[in-house]
Image (tube, rainbow, N blue to C red):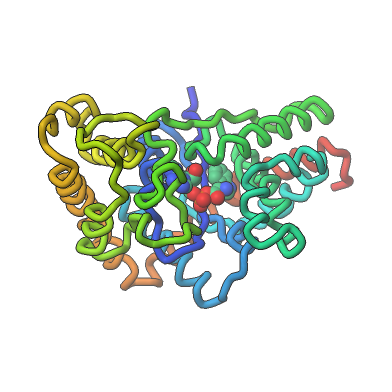
Length: 332
Ligand code: TYM
């Protein structure tokens, strides 16, 4: 039996990924490399939906590749590539735009959230059509599984709907994929505002643990994270969202179950617990940051790896696109 396909993507919109990106998504990408045929895309075209600087886009795309490899994505085992190097994404994206209803696209909560920041009138059209390009990213590879954080659930549902609609109308063309969203760690929250998700576009950098930040900076952010009422270290998302978030982070990185951590810190205060979380995070990220910085010293090598990935991606994507065009009745 052939291996199941996995596809996921991440935007190169900042100098560093944050701990939410890692625990919610990339950690699962690494695990799924084993026993699956995995495709991972740095989705630079999606990053154009907000204002970008050419030099920054280039730097962040390479930094994304270096971080993904440092976090454990193996370019030998997985197909790691840059979306803009595989033109079939735009081509199938258009077909998906022609499958989706305006009202359906208008219900996407990420569009509503993001466009409300700039005002809907100045939001880019690309921000609106973004989920249809994402559907194309997934469907081109006939993916079985799409490992993502909770915030992407609605986009995966849309992808399933579009695939099903196309198949019904034009004949079997796309695999209908399943989301792969963990129960724990699918939403890591901001350290200063622990009821909101940790985000690249967060108002305050103090709430975001960045993989490329210096260890002291991250330790300080954790030690000065928002303090909940009370003094007991207990997992209670409603009354103690800050402590619950730190317990999730500690547990995901150390592998210690949350109940064990609660027992370990019984009778100790928040201060001791925060110091322990800071230690776990800092020691986990230290070698990853060092490895990413080392990889960034040889840009040519990184670019070569990405070219190899794109060549493999194009060979799969072109087959799916040809099939889709043929089923639609275009003249070849
Ligand atoms: P992006 O670049 O915003 O985020 C990358 C991944 O990180 C997850 N994530 C989180 N998980 C837990 N807690 C958080 N605080 C947190 N913040 C982010 C996201 O869910 C995501 O899995 N639209 C996608 C990129 C994309 C894509 C695709 C994903 C484009 N094409 C095809 C899958 C398949 C996005 O903006 O992710």
